[in-house]
Image (cartoon, rainbow, N blue to C red; front, top):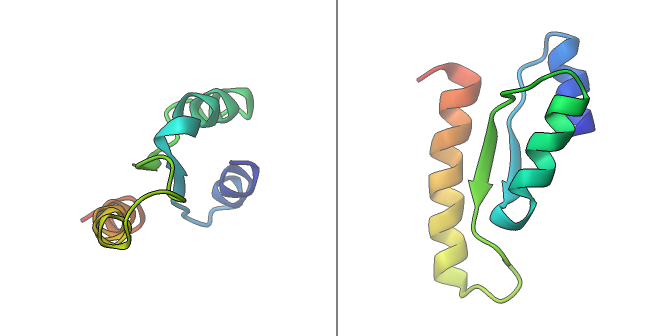
Length: 73
């Protein structure tokens, strides 16, 4: 979160990806860093026990969200 918010503050668009297990913490960090509503790309949790094909699906969905955040598509 810190890196993403810092880069955004400098004018560099960012997309931060986190798992469902860290969503609330990520949102709290964004608020604490002065960027409430900072967009997060949320993926399933935990990744370590997820089957590879599900990780690939998560990555594909995340990429689509990253593209929207960074390119406005």
